[in-house]
Length: 477
Image 1: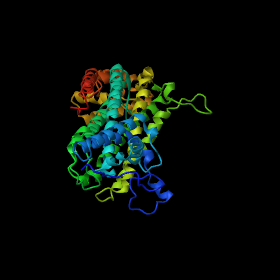
Image 2: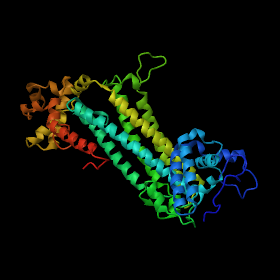
Image 3: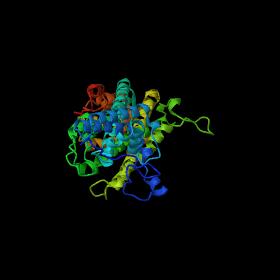
Image 4: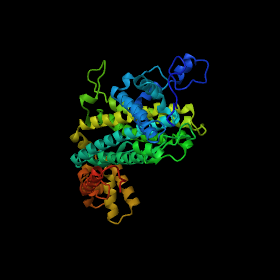
């Protein structure tokens, strides 16, 4: 079985270098070549293509499909290409697979043509993409952990720093900055857990499926799957070359991460404005205006917010492409990689930028604490107190509503209430109720699981730190 088999690059058609063309008597037009070319985006996984080819060449030698000497020659050539880097690859080719094989032919000669024995670009690109996704997810795991660690440290640091809590973007109840920041920790925990599930889901090997129906050569798919770090080969060659659902999962994950980073960014934009004045961003993460010298613009937060739309559109792009495709490889799926590369790049950069913004953030704690006073955000505490005395909560809610109306009429706040004004507005309310309307007390009394009270937030931070210090991402329980 060690006779001359496999494609060589000596008989390719003129013009753009291709891995096919033996049965063609005419060259393709320049427009066809240019429109079908994917080399610029494929270069993103040039290393993964080499790694997959090394495993394939080693298996071919071990199985006697090519000689051990040929296998070693091919592997040595591939390793040299890896050492050289992508700048030595030819770009006047159809895709990265061809670029690497052309360079391999230059280094080792005609034996390079034997590398493509018992495989197709269909299973090759599917393998490359899964390897690329695995490598990218490892980076995302690390970036999520680092941002979570920062949120944990700041949650601990600011666990007693008063600030308003919002619903409907209106002042609702007093909370603390640490409590607020910790909420973002948990969204990242979910994304890390999802990313691990995706890592596992995509960890099956298409290599050896060839075009769609496997091969007549006695290949060992388990060997290549094992060498490449996959759990096992994909059982169906047709499914292996057709499936892009794991990429849709990856784009969905990227979209979800970007949504939460966008929400964090929106808070940064709001909190850093003079209307809030809760936050001053570092010069290192802001930009200025070409005509307004006083401006410090939260451009990075705005760009994360804006580019989230592109990440969401990437999922839609691939889903729209895949919905009409029958089983088997279709050239349409060449369009699966640009959205993937784009979304992964946006996620990594956005997590890094969020870390930079929060790491250098100058929180205006006095302004945040002062803003809690006079906003009636302890009205619920007053209603809860009345309910604790036996008054039905709905009735207590109505009583406190009358008190708020009375305060507005007298142009005062809940904190300004005296025994006399309280008796005038709601004589049925005991004077002891005045003790529950200070913001500090409101936070301290909220000790239910997940609340901002001192004991509750300490328990939450301890829980979060145990998860953060554990390997990987566990569920929140």
